[in-house]
Length: 388
Length: 164
Image (cartoon, rainbow over all chains, first blue to last red; front, side):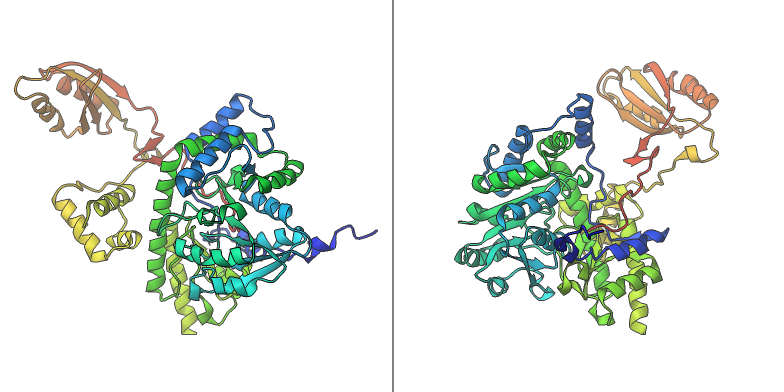
């Protein structure tokens, strides 16, 4: 029989967390700090709205771009939170999670050979999605020296005549880094100079602990060349509902919608009704959860200081990205050793790009009680490793 | 220390009274000493009135029941409800006492006791207070949630062990 599988998909590396997942899943009383999703339940009023929509028999497709009332609420959300104005009719598409929005943004814009520059470490789907769109992935290696922020110099160095787009994600998974207004303002001239499209994955935008999140689209001259991606998973604790959205100029959304329409049809109807309630009545829920994450973040950083584990201060998302290079192990080796010695699962930094090696991602989407126990185990492990 | 931090400390302690000053200091980005002083000050000022364990007695051998009594009373000239409240809350059988707006005046929550003890207390202690017009006693059949904690179906982490 012929080999039916295409070369493109074979070239894509399997996810770097798979191996760790397999080992960790076998350990019965493992304490995991390896999860990339909130520990909170979706607020009850949102779940209730989803249930009500089923109760009312709203089980049909919605329009391809999503319920108009949801798009209107999204437009209101973008305006009140980030000062951005989008036309609900033509400039917003509701997607199956932020992940789908990333995928369709790339598929609607890349021609074969187009280069996409993106900072690493980053979310695991960027490179595969670029490759599946026949693009060329150009990772920009970041380090804790710049607090994992993208600088204009690093961007300039990565740009070639073939670069079509810059894909950024702040607040960042896995580093917890943010980009403040002045950081973004420094990038803008390079973007304009090279006439780049910006795909800005802002899924963690509501989890920013220093100042309010600034969207790059809100800077002068940026809106018309930016696809802003956001969603409900992280801010409203709605990962399983699979609901996100993209906002961009009509001329871009039109083509993203084409990909979405033929690939997906429309996002889950029940989730869309629930999301209307999230946007209308959920600002307080976001604030309560964000405050709780912030307390855990500070708690974790304090424990790192005590065990003298170097870690730059992460101001966003719910991750810390400590430096474990002093132990002379790859981050994968470190994670396996920690798992075996102390039953604590964290994710190797290298799972998010080669330059993430020497770091581990520690999620603080866990209760203080869990974090406390995990940190005392980590401290014990770190002591033992240093004594060797 | 500003009022906001006080409130944050109180919220944390209300959720878990066993957080140490060190934990709270770490969570709020404060000095341990500072938090310790603040807690002690709030204890002195009786802002913090005590620390209790939240017990699910249904999981023990305890057979006693919980009851809540609605009281209608005739307030006294000059003293309003204060004197009557005092006559009620002095009894060790009374766990909580609230003055209410609406259809009746006091909610009396009784300490867990046997049916007989409760009946006895209501009829021979509460009902006979001269300002009390009427009583309505309600027995708690099940406790689902108490102090913000779900007792019936405690939360379990159902997330996968590792996700991107």
